[in-house]
Image 1 (cartoon, rainbow, N blue to C red):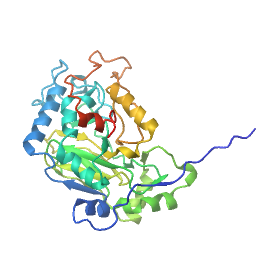
Image 2 (image 1 turned 90 degrees about the vertical axis):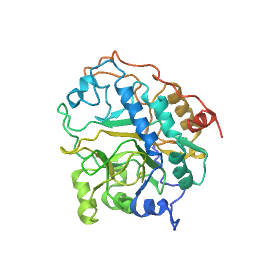
Image 3 (image 1 turned 30 degrees about the horizontal axis):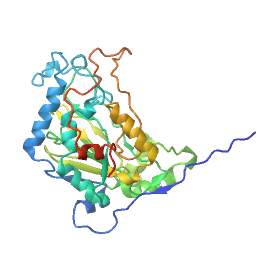
Image 4 (image 1 turned 180 degrees about the vertical axis):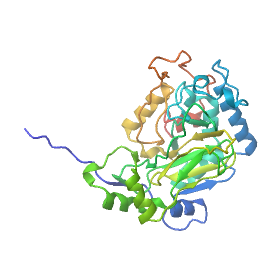
Length: 331
């Protein structure tokens, strides 16, 4: 008996950001990204960075933020992607939610989507220590966070900078204007049978030649200051840039993405609620592509980290706004 499989349908986004707005949305439309300066007052951003450092040094190890010799894997909580932290319930620490609740972070997303009834991603903390001797720098891993089955604007990602990000420091790397060629890449450089409904796709070196040579796109490192908000369309080719040997700056950022609550299917909302109750992390998406990442922290040898935490060190107050952004309470 033959089995018929149903291919996912190509879906269009909620809006395209076409036209002229006279603000940062024009830059997202043209280049695929923008930097909102001073989304959070600088003093508060620096205070949030210190909260992140306090969290890192709360595990009883000799980690000293001022002493580079202590910046080693054995002194740090387990990092899931070399520089990001998702376990130990850090995603739901008070300082992480305080960043997500900042009006200057939420407002640009509300303007993009045309509504303030938003959900937020339960995304990770990135603290990148420069000059670490115990790990090699990660080579570029160019990717997009949107399936080729989805066309148009479906997700806008965000990075809230809590520290300085200069040309030598760790920061977001991307191909400006690659968003304009997103559809063409899938339709001319790939076979539809290879498309994946998963909202993540890494590009090979050969595929990058098409972006770099055929389209003439060259990567840039996005520079930002404490309190700046970096926004980019998930169709923009991007990756995390490592610090150079000249960097002395500890990169500190919180990833946060917001999208209309109305876009969340009932099953996605139910999963989001399950993740919230488990103090878990999700993807860069707020309303879709939601699944519970591993909650418990495991050491490289596969054993449970004795420092594992089952709840945040400092819990946020579950205000009406927080619960709505978390998908726990309807608008």
